[in-house]
Image (tube, rainbow, N blue to C red; front, side, top):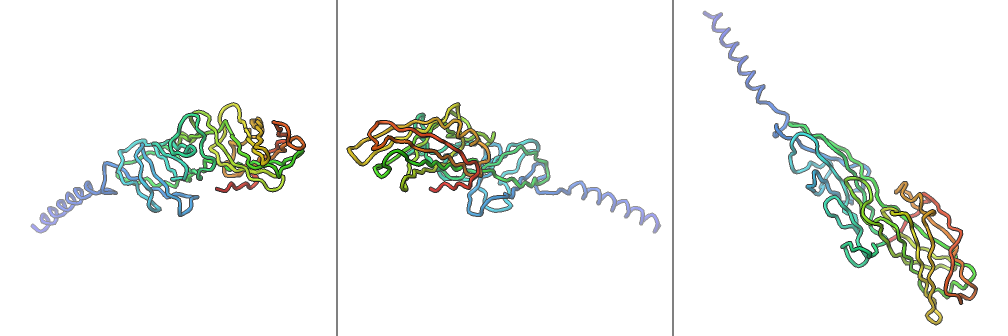
Amino acid sequence: MKTKQYIVIGMAATLLASCVKDDLYNTPHPDRGAVSVSLTGVTADDAYVLDIDGQAADITGSPFTYPDLLTPGAHSLVVYNHAEGFTFDGRMAQVHTSGSKTRADGTPVIPLPGYLRTASQEITVVADDTLRLTPTPVQRVRDLHIEFTVTQGRPELIQTVTGTLSGIAGAFDMEAGQTTGEPASTVVTFTRDGDRLTADARLLGTMGAVQTLTLDIAFTDDGRTQRTEVDLTEALAAFNGDMTAGFKVTGTLETPVGMEEATADITGWETIDGGGVDAEI
């Protein structure tokens, strides 16, 4: 009788263990998956956004777990920072236009937006598990420094110089990781130090077949002005390379002696790719 009793108890314990095992899961969400990100290569004061399938959430810590659980399978992920001077429409980042946050055809974009950084990838979510990622946002804008020396004239007579640079990008597709839209332009203001004129810009990149710089120069005497146009296509050919390294363009502004003519000329353009340029706002 005792032997039979032990056999019955053993069978009951086996059945109970089998039932418990079937009900155990790795997470509280056995039919869905979670996503957690820890950003690398970023500064603590940057405000970043995690976008999965077009639904965005502000990243509030590291690691950060996306607030929604996801169905198993493929999903699209984009990470970006709230860079100043940009409007974000879904996964599109657009540089503000001068005097407005809204892009308008033909209106120049601001010359010095903030440092936009983005990362994108396709992910695969597994049910009853947490996908842990360490994306590294990449810088998408590049500093441009323009500098030229005034010759054959009297630079002290120069009152103001503005330059319109055309053939640049004004929008960035953060999912595709590339510039998009039509070529835009921006207006930069030059400062003079003796016979040297300098200006800074921060660009998403060049766009289109031609990049042109048009200078409008105003003088202190008699309200005279000059307009000079130069083709910078060749000088900026390598601009869309390493966006983290500054890009410097130098040249000579040749103006007539006494600046009595209505036009000037720019010659001797040279480029320095990655020369430690740091555009200031």
